[in-house]
Length: 379
Ligand SMILES: Cc1ncc(COP(=O)(O)O)c(C=O)c1O
Image 1 (spheres, protein in one colour):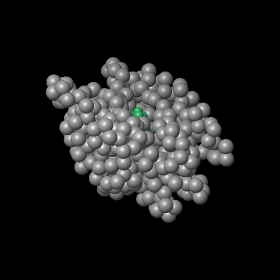
Image 2 (cartoon, rainbow, N blue to C red):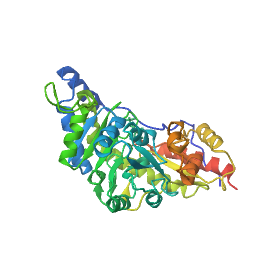
Image 3 (cartoon, helix red, strand yellow):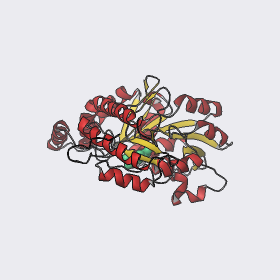
Image 4 (cartoon, protein in one colour):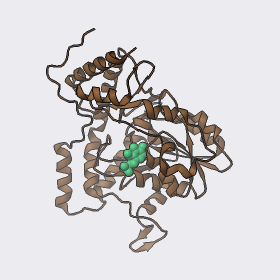
């Protein structure tokens, strides 16, 4: 079949991080007010985020890495073993190490790329105290299986939702589940504010602990009940976040519609399969990631990506290596293995452009590139 090339190849933007005029005006209003520290805008963002994600409490903070640290510190103790996906971004595991915990790396499911709870169960020891599970790419993990395992073994659960704002599980916001949920508002995230983060939870005591840790354990001016950090957000960031949050349901729906278009195209393309969505979940589609089948496409992934790029479709690796392939965690690996799926994912996945502003014209370019390149290499 010949596929009509778009008239002229204009590269499809991989992501869309631009602010709207409303966001800019919201930030300017804070600048004009002179109230730059965390104040009414951060408070309003916290309230709205709780409402929209199904959580009781939300605490803004400086970034998604701080969010993990603030969630882990009250829940885990130094020396605890905590189950963590081998297939995640580094911060999910590195902040466990910062807490003095031992990360126990769990393999991924081949279809979804999410943490494999059966593999997790096999790695539990008398020292296991928790599960830190990442909703990878914006798709919730199997939350029922995670909570069931946690209940059976008395484990605390932190969900890293840095990529999964407004994702749902069985019709509920992901903020309803687990002991704490953490988010990143990094510039490229679905809710990007430049830097920023948030922790949500449903327990009043834990919320207070996190609030104290976030701001030097201060209970009244210059009275410090405990040792903490300065991991606060500021109101410029809070205002941008609040303004963007109002649009996020619509933008998430646009990402989901884009995913449906990709699925229709990929159903007709050999050797590239989208990562599956956990049953019962809706994904926020931070990324749209596909697996390449090397038995079908006789080409290296690098070359495939170059060819797609030449036809106007940029792609990226999330991630080029799993956490057990990171030198940073080498000291924790003796006695732990194997992770065949995480390793295979690191060799076979690639992410295609995904954002709320993908047009039919973009999809014409994407379809042409995918069909042309795969038909060149398919056996
Ligand atoms: C899964 C995951 N966890 C944690 C983080 C850390 O967030 P931040 O960059 O805001 O510190 C990220 C950001 O890339 C992420 O993707």
